[in-house]
Image 1 (cartoon, rainbow, N blue to C red):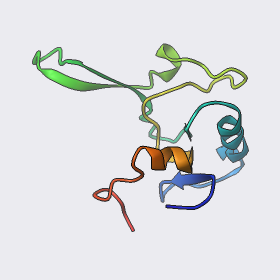
Image 2 (cartoon, rainbow, N blue to C red):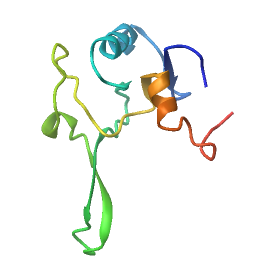
Image 3 (cartoon, rainbow, N blue to C red):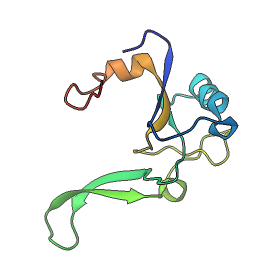
Image 4 (cartoon, one colour):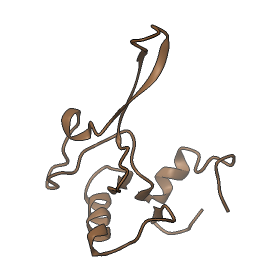
Length: 112
């Protein structure tokens, strides 16, 4: 893991440009209690997760509501269009210590 206060993680097929808003991501981390700030990508799967019963089977399930952040979430003050979500894309900036505090990366999922 890096030794810097923050780190950026982007999927290998994403391109960083002036539309990436890296400075806005940093500003959000510096001025709010957010631990991680996600970006938007072409195939955006951001949204909420909820435990409940699958409506088809009645069995317990983890349900994902993609694209629901702006509908069912809290908008960040001073950042119109930025919402708290449970999931984000593979384009994000995070506080290094907060990620380490929850165990860091899973060794099983780590790619070198």
